[in-house]
Length: 388
Image (cartoon, rainbow, N blue to C red; front, side):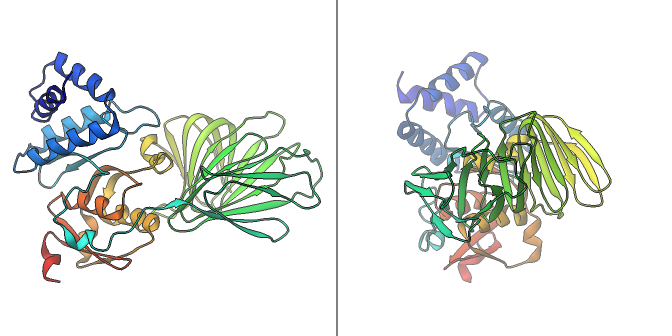
């Protein structure tokens, strides 16, 4: 099937002219494309579409919902693993584009001082005080006077061997910290996997305990896939309370906008315990808690773990979105007007593009524009940064 057929179907889909059969054909064909072919086709459609086509808000939302409904677990967009989707709610315009491309080459104010995305990097502080900088270089780390061995892999992960399980009260704890613009994966000796987001820190035992397995999320965010053991419960301690694993995959964020800890459950079951309350939550739910209160709500779990799969998934204010961008690219944000912080943003964008690509996508709201000066992102009303 020629690329022309896909372009024809995709253009018809954007303009809501596809039949049911044509929609099925389109998604099947796009799944079979290679990355380069997919990039060329999506970029071509974007160039043809951006020149003034506009959809009413309700139709744009319906189209976005249709595409997002096709996403798979751990693959946030159905049309393309690397595709970005943005709905400019304030203008009623729907855009479909590829975030890895140089989308607006004429925007020299951003491109002239581009910043690369974050990467696999962290610092490991051993129980004996030794500090080791981690990146994407394979190496073996041994712990003196123990049988513990740690493998640093080229894929940005740290794996502890099981070692001799201890039942003593004296447990050696290591600490893993990621800086701004860093992420890292930690594989514990009991089989538990932990992904640490940027600007985060976790304290954990060098060896799994015989009767308990306790880690402490000191700050930031982490995603857990716990190897459940009835005889040795796994707990995550935070300033707001304790999360007890009952056999599960879950995300914990200590840096929410309201200052509470957010524990989001994907699979299995967890129990959240604060000073005065205890609640067990189900998949698709999120517990928000601190020392004084605990509540549970339904959430989009894929939005909560988008960072772990390499995406920004925004459905929030511009201020909240730019806070995440600031941490990942290690930049400072400055606003021309405080009112800009409330502009709504709805977008799914790969985190592994340079900052220019991300900012260009956000500019497509036609409400905001950016100027990059060193490691400072200046935010303006649309096109007003040109005179600055």
